[in-house]
Image 1 (spheres, one colour):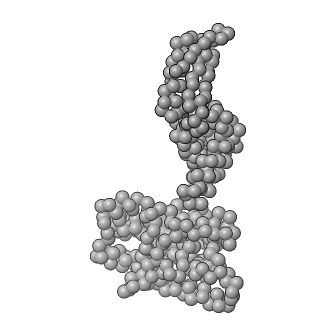
Image 2 (image 1 turned 120 degrees about the vertical axis):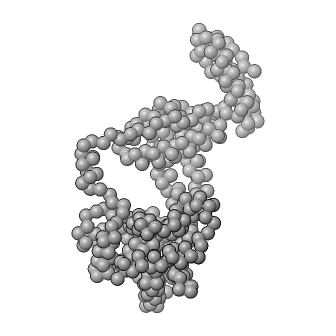
Image 3 (image 1 turned 60 degrees about the horizontal axis):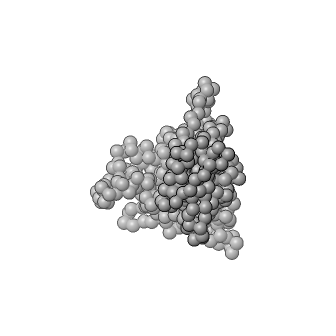
Length: 390
């Protein structure tokens, strides 16, 4: 039951309650109301929050304290590759709000923070930072640390493009899709002037649309052949944020739908078989120092390649080809999807080959791919691969 009193011309209320964390009796007082009616209304709201479990009993918790606790719990239930970007955004939030009491962070303060980010960061960075902030404050509300979420009605600021920005985009576009003639040129250049395993690497990217992390995680046993049908199994992805060859981690693929088998041509299968034979010969020559984890795309010491190395290899090939487009290894995935669409293959088959996360939705309608579709599609895939695997 609240009590009221007037001091120095202002009204004050006091609310007694039991702290659920300690079981001890406590008292909360708030002063500064000019009218008694406002004081009574505020006290009633406080009692309501106590009853519903949404009353902050600890006003001293700093943002940095709760944000660190949130990140620790988040990391327990997520993959390192997912936690790493969350940690970056959490650090950005801590840098700004760190030693502010979390309950004192208002909607206006948070909106000002987003607006200031807009001066130095890209839209995607601001959006991902906002996403992490929403998770932190939502959990703080659920834990009864704060009474309201300051991120709830925040608006992401929009970038205002200048004429120069638009000119730069047009002059230096980031290309996502590689035309087939350029794919042929890149592969022929890789075959003639490429570094170790370049031709095999970019051939597989072009002919399967596999993600780069999935490619460098492939092992000998992931190459399959049965009754004239050839495929590779995608059951893992390689995570190596430091690019230190010895500090890699094998993780589950990006989504559940990413666990899949990818149809490949006989020519591509033979190419990968030769690469495995080559790796085995290197292992025998190197001896015990060889990192014997059976990676198909391994360095000469047996350790897997890392994504940055392959990206740099592609830049080298593009320069040799005199191709100015800013392609990345992921561009081959976009091209592969486009080529499959042009072949008019069933959507469910395309999604299966690429391991799109939306495949689960498709799977609820198309339970499986029929043998006839698989046979027809495999034949088309073989012909496609032959067109640029020379």
